[in-house]
Length: 153
Image 1 (cartoon, rainbow, N blue to C red):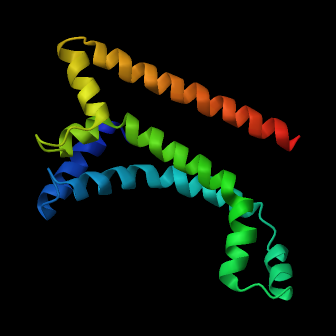
Image 2: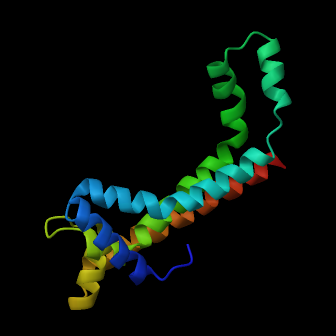
């Protein structure tokens, strides 16, 4: 989370080239997963620290199996932490152009890489449309978040 992105990209390139994962989709997925994991771990562990384990004991005393207790008690309680971790992971993955440039092959055209390439070479309406879609999606998610937090009060 603190290392400069170019250093991370070069380091991942050297490690992945030794294992043959450069220019492959599994390598790209593994790199983005490795970059997004700290954000997910932090948010989910923060949600788990505030979780009351006595709720699981209560569910077990009512006859719930461990899987049912997880699905009906734990998952709804830590759901906001999981959702925010997923959102952070998606934003991190969408922002990682440098790592994608280092690891992706010529046939792997991700949205951030394509936007970076087109914005560097020529400005087209496609970039404006993609930016508009991202802004509209962000405003929509912000509105949903505001509605959900208002309902909780």
